Image 1 (cartoon, rainbow, N blue to C red):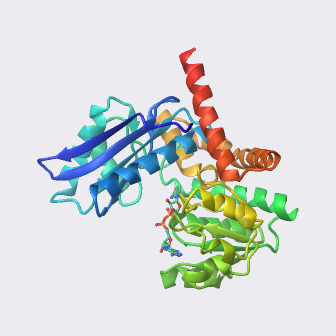
Image 2 (image 1 turned 180 degrees about the vertical axis):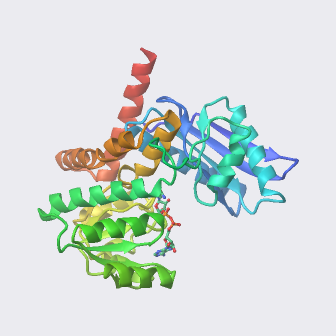
Length: 346
Ligand code: NAI
């Protein structure tokens, strides 16, 4: 029986016209941590559904990464009416009203500057800029996410191909903050790159700097590579794309890569080793959590380097019980949440 959400708080601020939702999936392991997304939703129901889905994902991601946090997510409806600063002050008041149960940070559509504004009202905010020369964790989480993805790809290649990354071709979908850093790490490890991004300049730069081969955005999943690394949007692994995958390993940074949970079974049936997204891309939240807890960059690196070990144990368990690895990952995350909650209660 999957865990259900603890609470959903609606934000409806008359003064600024701000509409949004803060969903708390679980606070069993600690305050519910997860970013604040600003997105144009067609309906109120779409907005609530997204908050529920994303907050559940954060619970699993935080538990799996061994962090002392539960899972939550805020979503705000775009476009914001009027003054952006006033809207984020109103959001800050909504966060404060939860009395520390929810920790926010930037996400799609929101910025470090927005979080600075939220911080004027609420203490439970992470993702604030680092002071120069600080050894403390914080700042841009993307390089840590990319490191986790890189280490996870290494683990998958060792497991499936029995080799290191030298000469292995990786198809990278999306050359944003995560994809770009990942490509650099892959090149340094001797991998070959095939890349796709709708922003042509990003592809051209990758071809020039890292000797990558540009590929069509619509068919990057079918590119002749051993590894497919989704680092763009979610829901790219579907009943249409999975049978057309060339790679036998899927491991990337994008959130919510499977369109439906059943696509995990489809990947298994097609002989594809799938590395569950929220295990692979936890580097960002590990960094955000360390910032919140006042830890150092070394603490972050130690935790990120555990990602391949976690993956290995999931792969082993999935093989032993003959289940898709995404199902086994969800089961494991729920076990960790329940065990952690029992320990806190004792
Ligand atoms: P970003 O917005 O910097 O980059 C996304 C890139 O994907 C952009 O270059 C965009 O042009 C490209 N893109 C969009 N549609 C595409 C398509 N159909 N095919 C190929 N490329 C496409 O985002 P960022 O920060 O690099 O994140 C990438 C993914 O990783 C997202 O799903 C994000 O939710 C996830 N993620 C990011 C974390 C972080 O620390 N930045 C942490 C955990 C997850």
